[in-house]
Amino acid sequence: MKLEVFVFYQEWKKAIDLVRKAGNVRLIFSSYFGAVRYTFFEALTYVKAAQSASGWKKRQMKKCALQTIQLIRGWAKNGNVNVVHYLFILEAELAVLSGKNNKAKEGFN
Picture (cartoon, one colour):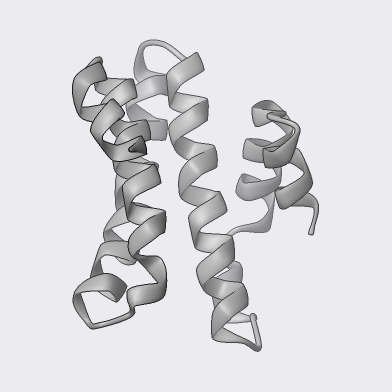
């Protein structure tokens, strides 16, 4: 999957372009695992893009990230323990975005 490669190499501009171009691909994934993994990478891409943006673009990226993270939170709340570690990473990245570095350290430990 191209998105995973872009995230791995931290090419956030290409990753965000791919996410925007693809739209909601969770509807066409045949496996639940693929949809969950894509959703995590989508949220991470939005958060990292927001960290490097400014102004309204930053707010827009953060809003998209929060919507995607809320979906993952719902899965965790409904009992999917396989997404809890994704939430720790995403919450830490959100803390970095908000300038809460101590909270970010807790999320990564």
